[in-house]
Length: 322
Image 1 (tube, rainbow, N blue to C red):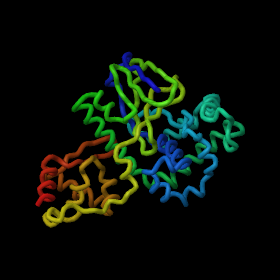
Image 2 (cartoon, rainbow, N blue to C red):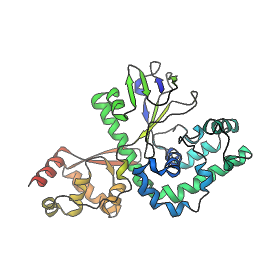
Image 3 (cartoon, one colour):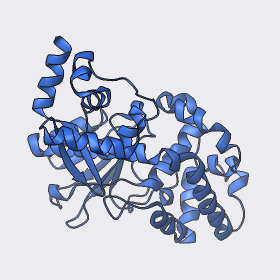
Image 4 (tube, rainbow, N blue to C red):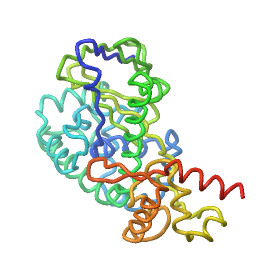
């Protein structure tokens, strides 16, 4: 069990962040044990050939049979929307004694062959291989992945604003609870407690590559929880279904499809992939639908997320029932 005591901190200091390097590291667990990640099988299948050109032995050796990862591969994001280059620079600058300690924590029985050798050289190989892995296996999917992660953050923010931070934690994951000022993550026999002091805060990071909530091994690491994002199962599935026929007759197939798709927040980039049209065309339709009052929009970082309005809900419901 992992516990974070927030009594020394303002609950308002709980923040969300999206981290490319966390996605990169956590995706290695799906690579190592695909059977535990059925939602990610379409991605594993689509990237199999590209991953064959990588040093898979090195990358998979970064996890263990329990799917643990070295803490230095999952640094706490410093901003709400991190850039991969900046996060890889943080990983590359990890003190070598920390790298060795994290390796020992993940592989207490001894290091796998690919991780043996001078630590500085091994760390350099890891950073270079992670960059190549990103380029061939995650970068092509990142716009849609990021849109789903951003939509999750928007949902959590709305839950907090509407019902409070306790309701947000209750909805976060089945293994997470907030009792009083203590956030508890169930799992494991040992209890790791950490008091979060004022100004330290707790960072919550959604991911598409986990089956349980995770935190750092080291109690001295910055407070961090990584949890499964909502909508993970939709990321790698094409969605070309349109809206109801009656509505499509009125506003066209694309606009009807957009209204049908925007039950949950999404960006124009994600919507373009799902509907099989260009981003510029989607943006034109979204502007028209928003001007008509059928959509709402909210900015999250560099992206604008769209959602059906109450008027849009009523229009779609009437069209479907008719």
